[in-house]
Amino acid sequence: QVRLVESGGGLVQTGGSLRLSCAASGRRTFSFDTMGWFRQAPGKEREFVAGISWAGRGTYYADSVKGRFTISRDDAKNTMYLQMNSLKAEDTAIYYCASDAPVRSMASAEYKYWGQGTQVTVSS
Image (cartoon, rainbow, N blue to C red; front, top):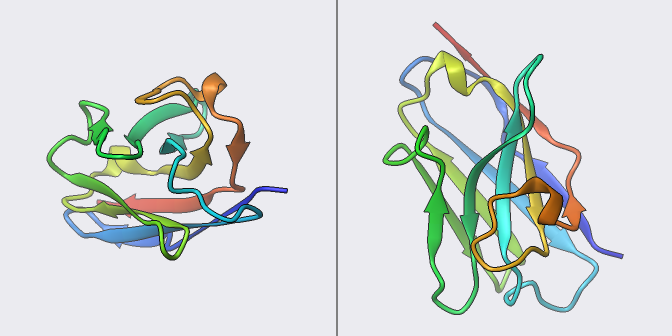
């Protein structure tokens, strides 16, 4: 059974940085999967943040994080990362990693597996 575990969340000041990790297990390789990061702030719907597809199909981002966040993956470690720089108060949310979606998907309903989430709080 596929399991995704996020880590790296925490409290950071405006303008600071955090790196989230998502460790995947339960399958020999995740290198052929599209994986993504989503977030959900209190009282708001879950929204797409960033995605990464396989075999050179690249990375893609929500406009709100473009230029500040970088998604990457280490397929040898079955781990995906989200480097978050220049954090803003509006980035405060629970961040979820997800996997098994069509190439370049940004729709949460299209992702099959989800982690439990990690809290990111940006204080002003």
